[in-house]
Length: 267
Image (tube, rainbow, N blue to C red):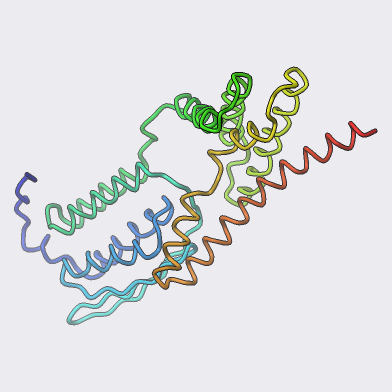
């Protein structure tokens, strides 16, 4: 049974429209940066507006959020640009819990902004080396479920770890994201081909796909299909194209390395 909501003063129960819009802008930006779908974001901010006696209309795209907030006496329009994107499921869960608290008036808008800042700046819940090992384990698991041989399994684990290390220590700029995808796929293909020279029985295709499984844009693709189904065509199409570009970067990196390898082997 949830604890009873704490007592809020009259000022806390009736925040000004400017304070409320500032909060909506901050939480909308954080949600999109963590991988929240656009239609889910629009639903959340509309529910918050209804709960706090504001009329809210929102339109979210991968690159920006438009907010129109009305009170009985004022109306505000706000545009927030989104400049970074990632998939952070831990933050999404915490943000969803925060939205529930706000909707039920269990905390004030001022306190919610403080918690939102804490969530935005929080470190990842797991140490980096555990995340690297988990990436290697996902590659190992995929190859295992595809009936990989013991040799395939032995190579898949370090291949997955290599991908995580390349992601961590490659270019961090969002403008170079697709270059990082290319580098990771090319590095994985190179590693697998080198391993194949020592283990001729290695299934190169299976291990290469297994090594790159953590980079497949699964959540982006699922969100794009969901948004298109909800008639959010602009955002859904944009995310679908993003997923296809990520997949193309991965494929091009593998094909590039395999092409060089076949060229030198034929000569």
